[in-house]
View 1 (cartoon, chains in turn yellow, red):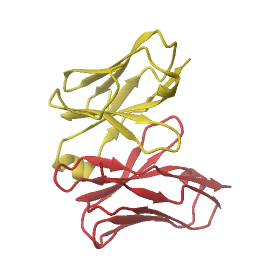
View 2 (cartoon, rainbow over the protein chains, first blue to last red):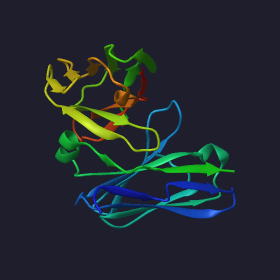
View 3 (cartoon, rainbow over the protein chains, first blue to last red):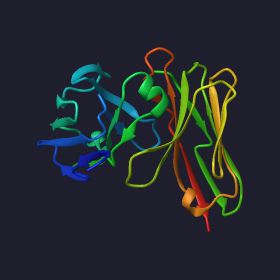
Length: 116
Length: 111
């Protein structure tokens, strides 16, 4: 496989459920990102990992918990979510610094999350 | 986070017409990128502009980076239904190159 792969593509969960989103990249990138995309709002950066180390947490509620076991895999663990957390969750990867400046981010297709 | 404002928010045109989308900020960026996102998919990088005043052409798409590296425009000539999508601009920070995204312009090209 090539590019950035996200699973599942769609997820419906209740507010008391626990679920995980998975992201995998086969591009040899060393930075990975979680973004939240809601209607009519800019992409919201949630977490950044460089070389498996979390380098940014944009004041994300603790009901979202990221995990990066290696440079190719990224998870987003979800628990006790709220209906307002319903959105498209996008994973992206890049070469850090100059790589991102010139070549941007490669995004996955996203997970459409609905919290009921 | 550096704020990027895109205009217009929505644009609906007939096939064959031209359109321009704008991306403005008060911040200086080391580069400016344009992405297109289709329904149910993630954004896909179209182009990166790095030098102030730079103009890049990609078939019927023309991208320009402002002289002061604070703004950019995307012009599509003779739009086609396949150009339909959400166009996002993103600026890379001057020092850490972290991307900040605009809210996007939804373009609909009617056949």
